[in-house]
Image (cartoon, rainbow, N blue to C red; front, top):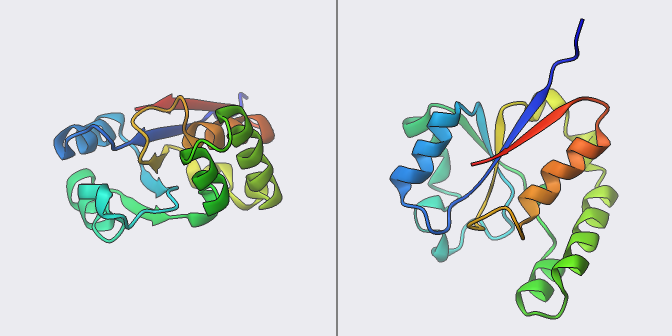
Length: 150
């Protein structure tokens, strides 16, 4: 009997129209959107504001929305990176240390995130904490994890 592979999706909204963004979620058949942004209520979020996402995700995609600030980087880490006071390599180390300290690999359960999608603002996953989070869980859990960036 083979072990089930957990699938984690990630998505960013910057540079996407609402049609493209929600279309990608629907096409991928995600089961839940987990918002991992620190500043999810920013005016810069446009259609992706925290107060609007539960409605849009339910009505357009037909899935639930969950906001998880514990999965976001701290204000200090994010601001230092955005202000170019730390490099991406430093950001990676500090963010992984933070989620490790928060015990995220034990707080989140594989079944809880299977076919869920981690949401962030970043246009791509390259320099984004959502990729680091998914890879961290892939490394920490004693189960097979597939990561799909939408």
